[in-house]
Image (tube, rainbow, N blue to C red; front, side, top):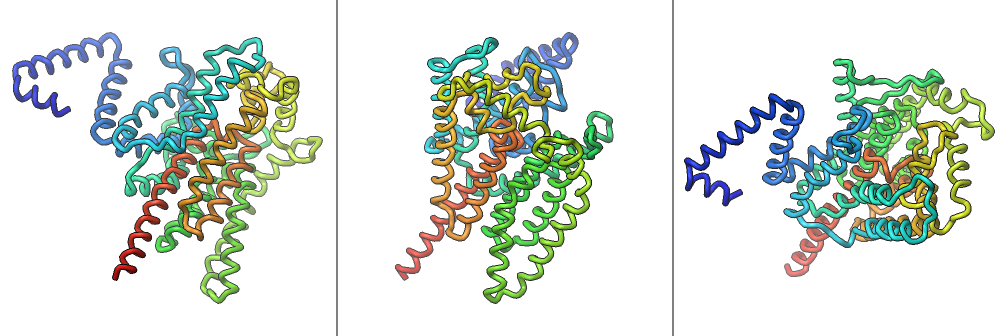
Length: 453
């Protein structure tokens, strides 16, 4: 950039000629390909900002996860699926951030595990008839992308702002959803055949629920880490919990029981130890949760009990889907049917929404068997343990409950393959590690200074 500026100053006539040629090219292309020309110019501007101010682009990239782009824009562009193109674009936009800030390879275990899964696919898996090697590579790229965000070494101030943004994502979705509804581009509400009315914002209800689930769990950790901003964190917990319940999605509500339960238990414990003022937020939290659930009870009952099932509870077809996928891989339990094969396994016997089984354990077991699935989740556990080491002792129980929430949620939804969960989840883990490590360094330096004095 400096070299370009130097040459423009040294050779003004060349600069003028360059500007004129660029303007002519853009002007002519607008006449023949207006949409592509506008897209190209916007891409150049965004690319220039990404190089000049990579931190600004990181905020924008994070905010895009508040929108389910593949549901707002259907079809393909240049022969590429919209979701795949979106993932590729955000990776390219964050390359300058990686170059400027550096990356932490010790958090690359999940990417290594996915590479092993590709090896298993090509060497040992029993492929489905329609499966191809290109599908495996595509699956690898899509699944590994979020784990690159786990490795970027953000500056401490930037990491803190990222944490605030992640907690605001559900509200961003709601605001954008209202705007899209106002111009008749997308429906703010989703009405099911059961009669249940679900809020979806700029997403679909399960995706908004993922954002809201993180928007409740993360402030519970941050409340313990930054008690001086208690009112702000309590406000976020309340708003995001209302959004979560309004989506009518049951899985994330159940998975939050661990971290919310521990939070309430810890408050009761402190109250019994003499901190009487805690009775106010404690009672307020219990009453608020009870009132919110009561208001949405009719919706939850319609989704859970209106359809008769063998289990007695309507799981939206999950039990049938899980049985179907398990039967199709039962003869190949160790190496599966190939990474990404689960996306083409539904032959029409299941509802078309089950492109994947809505259970990440079954999904990766289907793809690469016990070996691949085991390696992937072991790699995640190793990352979780490494982060746990830098956390303050008071934060560790909340962090453990947060990880347990993720593991339980993965039984009923696509936590590792849905942008609205896995990108903010990995992003937060990275930021939590960075700010905790920085705090640890400051505390160590303070102790050493005290000793010297």
